[in-house]
Length: 405
Ligand SMILES: Cc1cc2nc3c(=O)[nH]c(=O)nc-3n(C[C@H](O)[C@H](O)[C@H](O)COP(=O)(O)OP(=O)(O)OC[C@H]3O[C@@H](n4cnc5c(N)ncnc54)[C@H](O)[C@@H]3O)c2cc1C
Image (cartoon, rainbow, N blue to C red; front, top):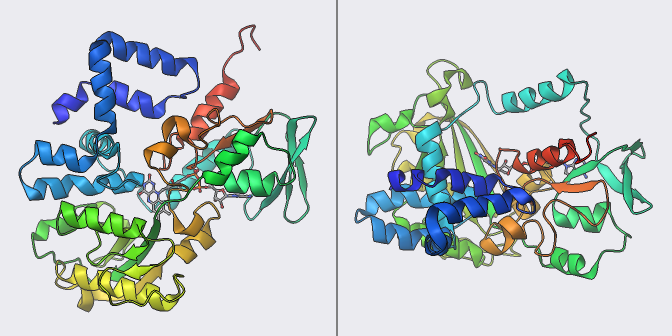
C-alpha cells in the first residue's frame, strides 16, 4: 500500500503544501497530468475523495489492520466515513513510516521556545497577554491594531491574523462593510467535534495487557474496531456521547524519559469524538441536562473512558498519582480559536478544506483589505503544528516582485 502511495507522495504533499490560489498550484496540476495522463488524473481525483472505510474494506481483510489505520484520520478532524479520509490516512501513514513521530525533548514548550528564538534572533519581538481587540482600517488598507488595553500598534507592511473567520470578520473588523459573498461564507463557517484531554501522572509504567511492549509506543489508539470508530464519530456529530469511544493514548515518557522522575511515567489521553453540545448519551447513562460540558458531565464521561482503558492497562487505577481533565470549555478558555473545544478551529470536512478553507468564497489567505492576511488552522492547509498557512503567506510577502525590490 505504501509503495503504491509513495509513487505519488510528491503530488500528495505538494497538494497539501501548495498555495492553491497561486500559479504553483496550476504547475502541480500540470505535473500530475503529465505523469498520470488525463484519465489517471481523474482516477486520482476519485482516490483523493474516497472514505477510509471503503478503502480499508477493499484493501485489508484483518479487522486489526483496519482498526490500526482507521483512527489516524481523526488527527486531521475527519471520521472514517468522511470524504478524503482514506487520502489523509495514507498521508499520515506515509509521514509516520518515513519520518516517525517527532516529539520535542523536554516537552511541547520547546517547540514554542525554538520558534520564539527564530523571531527574537532576527530582531523581532513577541508580546503575550496582549489581546487584539480591533484591526484598524484606513483607506481600504489594514493599518494597525488596537489591543484590549487600549495600546495601538501601527503596521507598516502587513497584518497576519491567526484567528477563526468569526473572530476576524465579526469581532476584529466589526463595523467594516464586507462583500456580501464573504459575509455569507463567514455566516456558514462551522466548527467540528470537541476535544477532551486527560493527563495522568503514574507511579510506574503502564502494564498493557495485550502486549507489554506497548508501553514503548509514543501513541496507541484503543478502540474495539473500525465500526466502533465509525459509530462514535457519527454519534458525536449528532450530539451524542459515544458508548465505546476511541481513546488516543500518548506516552511521551516512552520516547523522552525527561518528562517524568525516574521510574515514573506520564500519559495523556485524547478524545476526539465529543459533541460540542451534548444532546444525549449513546450508552443511556449520562443525563445531557442543558447540553453544556459542566464538571459533572465531564467527569462522568472521563470515568467511562478511564474504565474502558483499565480493560487494557491493568495497573492504571493503582498507578495513578494525579489526574487533570480538560473538557471543551477549558480548552476553549485557553485559546479563543478553539471554539466549543474544536481543536482544529473549524470542521475539516471537504467542503471546508483546501480551496474552501477558510471561506468558500475567499481567495485563500487574502482578505478584502490590502495588507491584511488570514492565517492559522481555520485556513488552508488546515490544522496541525506545521505552521503551513503562515509559511505560505510569508513566502508571498517576501517573494521578489517582477521588477525587483
Ligand atoms: C488538545 C489538542 C491536541 C492537539 N494535538 C496535536 C498534535 O499532536 N499534532 C498536531 O499537529 N496538532 C495538534 N493539535 C492541533 C494544533 O495544536 C493546532 O492546529 C495548531 O496549534 C494551530 O496553530 P495556529 O498557529 O493556527 O494557531 P493557534 O495555535 O490557535 O495559535 C493562535 C494564537 O493566537 C492567539 N490569539 C487569537 N486571537 C487573538 C487576539 N485577538 N489577540 C491576541 N492573540 C490572539 C491565541 O490565543 C493563540 O495563542 C492539537 C490541538 C489540541 C487543542
